Length: 394
Image (cartoon, rainbow, N blue to C red; front, side, top):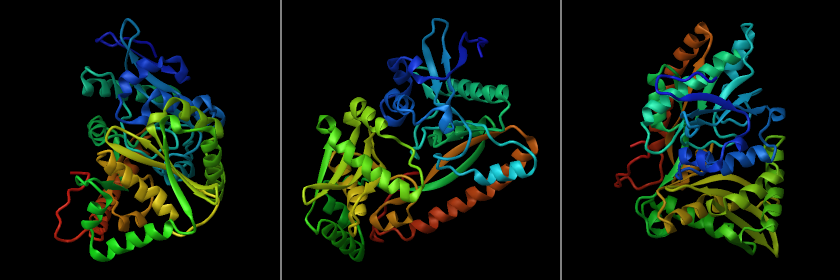
């Protein structure tokens, strides 16, 4: 794709992120969300976690001016399956193929293996964002049409991007996650004071029991991160991932690379008993949030998962003035621990008209069900009924 539009820009595809200077990419990615930065995305490619052989062929769309300066970009992948996405379209694939179509390969704009909301159509600071989003979206659709794929999917965009993409004709989908919101707390006990008495006592008991059996918990970040920490954490990750999914997505090289390139964006919660690391939780830092990503253990201890993944993340957010904790996909059990239901988004372009119409009708019903589910679950939040707490969606 090299045709210049009236504004003298060129849209093209790059199949290796390493071909784009990190500084140029990051001028579009910004500093708010660590997962769309060049360091994170390139670590996935350089480690071999993301490559055609794993069903993730990089197909990044970039927009350049006449001098070759990067104006916008989209982390885009040609997918041979729907694994590692967390926005589930397996039912769509089954229906499409039963009707005689070929659903795969498809195009996906996303951060691989990362169910975290963030910008997906990255625009260089100082430019007209809506205009560039329109160009980037048109570029992605043009790539899909050139390749003759069934569909283009944009997973976990920001709400503003989602609305803009809907206005461009993409189908709009919603789902939910559970996020903890910082109501100006100075201490963890301030948060507990906002809870109903029974919930407050439950969390205190869980935290106390998690530290029994002589378990020590350490927060490791920045230059404190050593290969011994990654060796131990990778063993936890492989053990837990192997039992839950059969084949974990990330390899040891990936953790080494992010430890080297994003040390100040990493908060690793490590648990030790009798001088041996036994469990860990990996978090990443954004400008306003801490993001829980991976957990693993080689010993089972009651409530240790809640302590390492949820409560320590809240502690860190309060201590550093962060607005929220996003603890990843799934988990209605998070609700009782102060994490509230909130919307997540995706947008979809489908090539075949009749298939698109059927999915569009389904998505209208699904959005209404998601709204009802979020409203219903919020009624079971552990906070005192006399408190008025804004939701993240507000």
